[in-house]
Structure formats: structure tokens, C-alpha cells
Length: 563
Image (cartoon, rainbow, N blue to C red):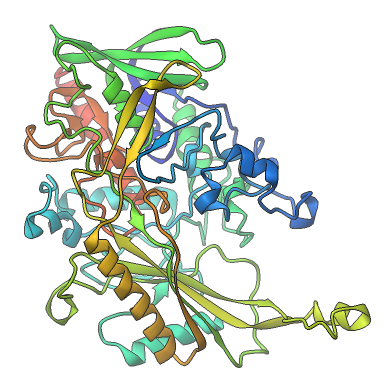
């Protein structure tokens, strides 16, 4: 295998797939490195067509799963079940440490978490890009919405995003395919909120699902409403690296894919003042190999990318590559969740729905966007995600047997609705991850330790989330409204961000406005580690847009002979 390339991409998830596609299609011979196993689209989705009764435990969390994924099931038991556990890492083989509890959910395979994500895609706005500067918190984003608007459109037109236009300044519209229809109870809730409130609305969730036509990739077609997405979609109906961007990169003839490749160091040349390649450990043989490239895209996911930078030490960078500011590993963020309200609704017993649609409802941010929306006790905001459905009929002891039971279990029960808040976490310097060189993994690499938690601003916001969720369901005419707030620890949102933030000043940030390391401009970091603040919106769409933008910049700089 050749050891020299135009570009190296580390990681194959959402940002890595986009980096591979863009660099390859622009003519660069590109090595794509993945630390885990190969997963081929369709071929390697073993449970895609199985029903719950095909699993030994009915697609539940078994004791074996609890042993292998003992940290992940603390918060993601809904996902790490028999049907999808094979896409989640073994916590025993890939340990980490916790000064404070942190839920680090990982997928070490080609495609990464693009196979297991929940596909919610929302643009950030200038409410988000300007927030730090206006609030005097952390550092200012080096970009504004106008810098990324066209890249959002570029990405959306390629992946397919369903939704409806709203014209909201806090949630810019996307390039939409038709929205996924709300069911009758979701629609009732939407209309009731429109009647009761002037400051908020209910819309269809914006999800990366093809609802009409096709999109580029391996046979990507319209969504079949199976909602078995985290198993891998054989129709390519939702966006994943495996069905979309990596096939495009492969089709260019410029991609070399190497799985089982654990990148642990970026090689720096002090004379040239640039990176010259990467050093990997073969995960199967433990062989150490070096690969050279003119450009490196680090897209291994927030924690992994920052770990690689911290391990990339030299005389020039004794504390990790690009860490002149001392901010590498700090400002760790997530979205806080696991709270809201649920309720029931009488009526509509003659109504049902077809299939299992992959998107419910979304309530965009309505707090702290000016005027009466501003809350006196906390800054930033939150949105709500949720859905309505019909559960099974409630059975009683006196009729739960024989013919009566057989008849009852064929009749759906009443309607219920659940709405859950997703809130912003501020970029606190003291929220961090760091490396422990005394505790190493099976490949001799230092393990990650987490020290991060929510603070007073988030705790006050959580009270408002529960109150508003309960109030909305009550005002909308639902009954048995039950507010809930479950324990939250960082990482539970599976939206890790920060740790290698963008900024205007190399003294206070790691990356510039094009996602380049300030002091090593031929290294681009385009995953969640680059975020300067979190917003309250699901971040993956922004990772894609930033990656496409950075790749365009990198190729132009290469043509100018700047690398």
C-alpha cells in the first residue's frame, strides 16, 4: 500500500464521510482511516429486517449487553438493545475514566455514529453565533450565519432534509423535501399551541430522511417508515456516511479506505511548520505505520480528535498539537435533556397511523430571543422534541386470559404524547477531558478522563423546561399531565462539542474560522470539537456544513501552494 497521499481523513462518521467525499471529488488522492471494522452498506446490517420476536429477549437490553456496554446502558438503553448493540463499542475493551459521570457513546466502525444517530437536523443562527460575544462568555465564534448559510444549503440538497419553512430568525429554514405528516394528535397539539401562544409553535421534526425522489449514493430512495434506523437502513432513506458520502468518495477513484487503523499522533515538522502525516497502530496486528499527506482532516469525533491532538507532542507543542492557548480539552459541552412532560388524550379512538414514522414534532427555541421572551434567571435557550402515539390497551387481571385477552391485545389503547426539552450548556472552561498516561488501553494509549457537569444556568433552565412542557400540554387540553425530570449527566445527549474550539485569537482558541489549527494550517478539525458554543439545536448538520466549507478552503489553499 502506498504511504503517501494528497490528503488524510481521520474518521468515517458524519464529518469524516463529508471530508472524504469533498476531497476525493476535488481530485485529491485521499487516505481515509477508521479505527474500527469495515461496515458495508446493506451487507453489514444483520438485523435490518428482523422483528422484535426474532430476538431472544424481544429486542431488549440483555444481561450480556449490560456486561459489555455497562456505561452506555446507563443512559442509552433505548438504543443499545439486541438489534443495534453490535454498533456500540464494548466498554470493557475501550475503557475511560470519570472524575464526574460522563456518558461516552461510541461507534467504532466505518460510518461511525452516522449509522446510529437520530437524524434531527437544524441550522444554527446568529442567535447562536453571536451569543458568546453578547453574553461576554468564553470567546466569540469567528464566523456568522452568512459565512455558512450557502454551505448548509449545499449539504441539505445532497443529503435530503424533510421539514417545513417557518421563517424564524432563531431557526433558519433549510432546503426542504416535503415534511413528514403529523398524526392526528400531534396536529391537534400543533393547532392548540397556535391558538394559545403567540411566542411559540409546533412543527414537524426536521430529519435527514428522503420523503420524495432520490438522493446520491447507493440506491438512496424514499423512507419506508420502518423506524429501524439505528440498525442501518437498507434503502439508504436516511443519511449515513455508508449510503451517501463514502460511496461518492469511492466512485471518484481517489479514495483509499483503511479500517482497523488507530490514529494516535499527527506528525509535525518543525522546520516546515506543518504536519507531514499521521502515525497509526493497526488494531489487529499492533503494527505501527506512518502515512504522509499534504493535508490532514481530523474528524474522529469530539473526544477522539482532541485525544489525538493531545497525544501529538513535539518540542514545538509539548502540551499537544495546536495547544498554544491551553484550551485543548477544555470547554466540553453537550445538550442537557431527559426532562419534559407526558400526557394522555381522550377521543380519536377511530384514528390511527400508518407505519412507524421516524420524525415527530419540534418546538423551536422561544426563550431569550428578545423582548418578553427573555428570562430573568438564565441565558440561552432550549427546544422541544416529541411525538404522540397509541400504546397497547390497558389490561386488567380479570380479563387478561383466554379469548378476551386475544381480542383485547388486538385493540390499541388510548393516545399519549411526550415532549422532551433539549437545552444549551454553556462553554465552561473547567468542563474538560484529559488524558491519563497511568491508565492505558490494550494498545498502550492513554485513556480519557472526564471532568464535566452542568451548572446553575442549566439547572434553572431545566426548571423552566419542565414548567413550560407541563403548561403547554395542559393548555392544549390533554389530561393526566405528568412532568418528569430524570437524572442528567454530561454526554447523555450524545452531542459532545467543544475541546478544540474555533476562535479569532490563537491565544484563546485552537482553530481559526476555516477550522484550521492556528499554528498548523494544513490540519483541519471539523467535527464537534470545533464548536465554540453549543446552541440548543442538534449539531450534526453544522458539522457537515463546516466540513464541506473547510474542504473547499483546503483545496484552494493547496492549489495556491500554501501547504
